[in-house]
Length: 215
Ligand SMILES: [Zn+2]
Ligand SMILES: [Zn+2]
Picture 1 (spheres, rainbow, N blue to C red):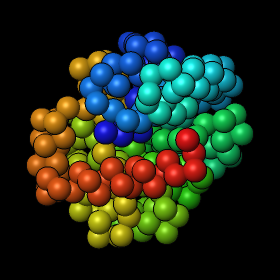
Picture 2: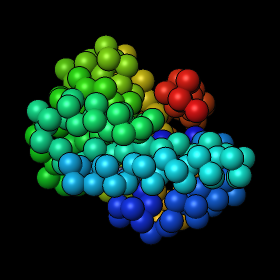
Picture 3: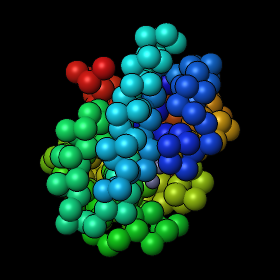
Picture 4: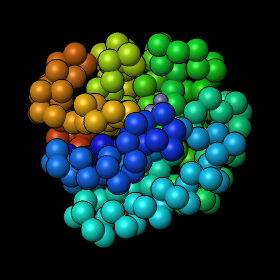
């Protein structure tokens, strides 16, 4: 299993990177991206530390631990510039905290995010067809989330993304160990998103496509 959106205690997760990665390995993961919330205040603090620990964990735990970042509440017009900055700092996976309906994320975050050098637009809420088409064009993957609060629009997101030809990935947005992937959670989420059970394999392949050349 591959999961490209998780949090550690470097932002609002409860586990150290080492415990998160080891628990993921124990759950049957083959790859996990550590994508703590970053903005202009902390990216240069968090990323070097996540990069350091991911290297050590990948070498010792027989799992790919990938250093990443979730750009969160960045003023939309600055997303492009900030994502480039995070790449420079060494983020291998860039997730954008999209316009979930469970929070007041700045309007047009989705629109600017899908035109920046990001990998995944997370929990995009009421994703517009126009933004989904831009995501397809720029090969930005769209997230289907197992997280309850953000997942209420999964069905709508899947329909719009597939209509636009954008690719989907399934992520957990893990904050506590109980959020990590399990068979039942995957089945339940697919059902809720209106996706066939065998669609999980396609989403895993989309995640692998992101990882290509990054490990
Ligand atoms: Zn988020
Ligand atoms: Zn998150």
